[in-house]
Image (cartoon, rainbow, N blue to C red; front, side):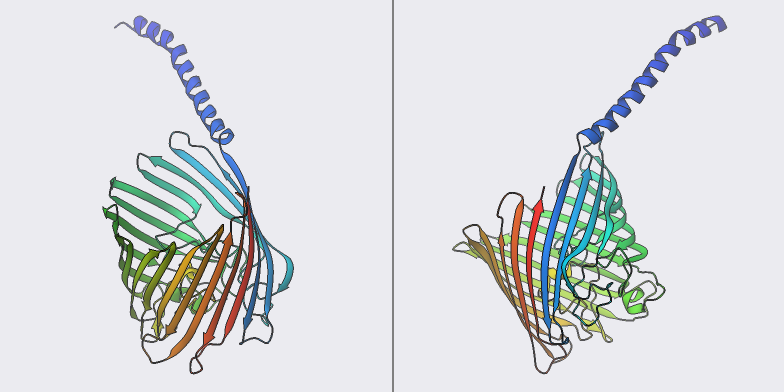
Length: 411
């Protein structure tokens, strides 16, 4: 091909190349515009009154708080999506409680400090059945016994990092996360507790569906918390641990079964030295419209250190009075029964716990938990909740009663 011919062809194709580039740019900008225009915005207001009567304190806590949430989420474009979420927590009534940042140490703790926070900010890409998410995000695993969002509290726990969920086959889901920062419920500002933990955290979970009624899960969690100036190691690095375990969920006719076991050792820069075990068994059945459950859960101890679950949604476990947010040095055995059902539109629940030490003869006490939830409309939910912990006279704990009234409006 002569030079003249090449020039002629290039000259002829140049407008087409430019037009294609312009069209591609236009298509891209149109796609980005459609992500925004076809996206959605929502607001969520959650008011809560929480009262606490703890015999350790002369004064009762009375917390009246409002969490206001704005969520902006794009539509998908070629597999990409993004989300921004902002939270504000404000005292709108009584502030006679210890929020962990307000300095009211004469009152029991209600860990709902005031502040405005960027709760989520992430971008995600989905390819077939796999998804990768980068940024500040909500991460919950299973029942949230080890990795959770603590959404019960007004300021949710979220994570900065990269998460990939891969399904190589239909029956297997592999969930891998690297997290460099944990944004805790005590934020957005430091107080009696650090508002955030930094470190190199790796979490792996694999769920295998044996059948549609039986699922087996394996998990490995490395929690590595850095030291932080102004805070004792017990509130930072000593929470570092390596945990490995398995979990089973299934049903046999009308009976549901759950079982879990794990082992844990210290990791990272922890000053502790221990090797503790965890196990749980749970049975459930539905009779005459009522769901019954009974379970036995043990968090062991070793060398004066209890099995740690610092990232769990702890309020879901071991009683709503939250007497065991940190596992005692002697470990804990929790035997409980519960029933849930409906009375018209009301959703009702009642639970009873019996707590004892795992590695000694100490009895911690018993607890009764009651809840009534009313979905008043499609956007408004009302809830009343009560917990009463009765301490054993020979144990180290004190009687505690808690009461909550919650109204949540989602628009």
